[in-house]
Amino acid sequence: MISHQIESLFQRSKSIIHLLQLHSLFIKTTIHHDEYRLSQFISLSSSISLQFTRTIFDNSHIIPSIFAWNTMMRAYSQVESLKLFKQYQEIRLKPDRFTFPIVLKVSGHCLMIGTGGSLHSMAVKSGFGLNLHVNNTLLRMYAGFGVIRFCKTGV
Image (tube, rainbow, N blue to C red; front, side):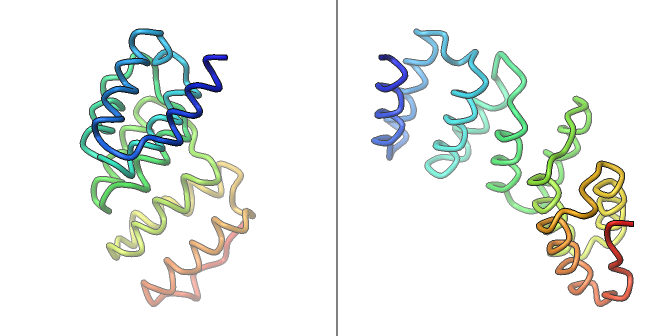
């Protein structure tokens, strides 16, 4: 029953006041220890107040899921996204097929060819060298660098 009520509250939340109320409910009911609910909350709140979301993210009692990390990296500015990715690696989380397009896109926009090349290598070593979304992002990144001839993926 409480799960249905929480889903309803998520759907109706549109302001920082709603987020504060939801967060209070999470603490009272210990839902903030549930990785799935924390990820949902971060996804919802990042479009309402990124500053508030970052506070929740940084002060979580559990390590946020890869989904939550990807949500935060996607929501932030380019430089902050790469900083989050470094933190992500420091706690030894494994990037997924959604992580690589986010950070590769940032590398392309910032014209960081060295970082982009390292991420390309990491994507291949992680088994995502043949992933369609990763490859499309690599193609766009290398095109932005003007070095499209180097974009041989999946090798």
